[in-house]
Every structure is written in structure tokens, then in C-alpha cells.
Image (cartoon, rainbow, N blue to C red; front, side, top):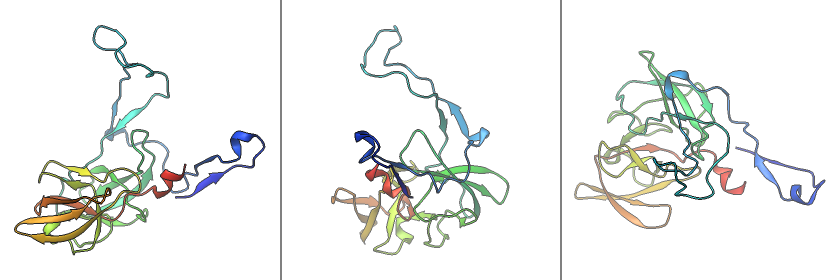
Length: 203
């Protein structure tokens, strides 16, 4: 991902950097994978203001992202890399061999036309999801489950990655982005690679 810099025609533009969106290949989301997202304006069910400074903004739709990687041992083709207004990461639209489509978090370096899969028999390659027991030590991973079957909860935001350090007694030891080492059941799934949109922190 690249950043767009501006000529300093005004003081505000001198240090301004915005995303260039060069990696995005499709502008409209997949209709079957979006839901309406109702804004509250910070008001509760009585219509009273309970959270201040909320309101306005562009109308958004929620993209249904598959954090569980439900379909196992079926290869999928990456159709597009898309923008998601609800998260800092980019999302990838994939289509399985049987025609079903889904959104996944787009890892850094994933290109349109690449093949991804999930399951115990998947190869430890970029974008593939497999149990921590099957991932080689020292691999960078993201979208890691805390509880097997619950879906990825760790390292989902732009540029995040977790390192798989060791395995012992049915547990995997992973190094979190904070530097903390955590024990996670080795049956829990994780996706290979670093979350994309790495330059988000420099915007």
C-alpha cells in the first residue's frame, strides 16, 4: 500500500498523507455479503443522548467477513481486494470452487487470482488458514482464534501480525503484537501472513 503526499500549498497540506488506495481493485461491495448498519447518533432506546460526540459521517454498510474460515479443504480464488469502511484492514473477496463467495481479511501481498484454502491439509502459504498445530514455528500469522471454533479474534487490524514461537503439551506459544507470550490451544485456527494495509499507521 502506498501513501499519497501533497504539495504544501497550505500549512495543513505540508505533512498531510492519505491512503492512495492503489491496491483496491473493486469499488462496489458484493451485494450478498453486506448488511445494513444503523447509526445511533449516541442515543439509547429512549432517544436520549448517552454517548457524546457521535453523529454524522457517511452512510455505511457492514461487510460480512468470514473470521472462522468455515469451508475446509475447498480451494478458493481471490476475485478482488476491497475497501471496508468498518475496519483499518482491506478485505479480499474470494470464490470457492462450488461458486460460494466470502470475504476474508486481505493479508499483505495477496494478489487477485491467487488461490487460498483452509483446513488441516492446507499448505502453510499466504492467506491459507490452518490449525496452530500444523503451522511451522517462526511463521507470521494473523486472525488467530483464542478458542477453537470461535473465529479469529487476535491480530485483525491493519499491519498486525503474531509470531508462532513454540508448542508444548497441546498448546501453542504465540508472541502477541504487544510482546506478550500467550498460550493458545493448538487446535485453534490462524491465517498465514501479516494483515495488509501496513502503511495505515503513517496516515
